[in-house]
Length: 255
Ligand code: 13P
Image 1 (cartoon, rainbow, N blue to C red):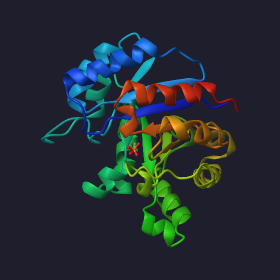
Image 2 (tube, protein in one colour):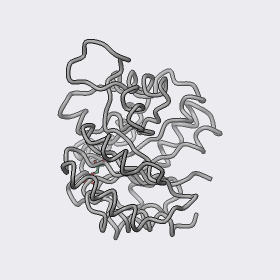
Image 3 (cartoon, rainbow, N blue to C red):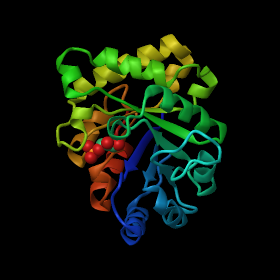
């Protein structure tokens, strides 16, 4: 059975004190559960402080991006090794904001996945269609193309360390969530593609998160879908009282 992964993507929000306070708020209330892993992904400048606050706890640390090279003259960039050095277990790659705002391509995401796996970071690879693409009936094609490009050349063994996050762009930060049925349709399609690319055993083990306006009141129904294995949460991960009920919903869902 797949374990749920509930991850908070803090994006470019909070400052040092509010980051650490949020972690304490989570740790005070969150009870460990063998079926649900919880992670937080703060801005890279706060990974050290957040990591220190999390040390020895059941909450994992993740970063929001990395550069594919190991080291060198790449001003302003951060390597996977540096993230591991700060205690990161996960790294979000190819978020739609990076694809749109920074022009990140599937080929770049692909290079980052290899670099992350090389230093034993677990990539959370984001894919998802825009509203225009959905309305044109192209959701499956867009998501499949992103996956084929981002996951190109990976072996089944490498893929077993990758988490996917389906985040329809039109649902991010808009308050519009994909309905559980809409999300499940895409998740099931993603799993079918994974069977084609990596075989049944790997496909059935791959964690596929949903992201896009996940909140306490829609989490349970989304997470109850057969192919939804967690959530990548933006806005509602910035306050303990909003994020904790989502973690709790995952603990309550029985599949
Ligand atoms: P929201 O939960 O704010 O819609 O953001 C989703 C997201 O982009 C997580 O990576």
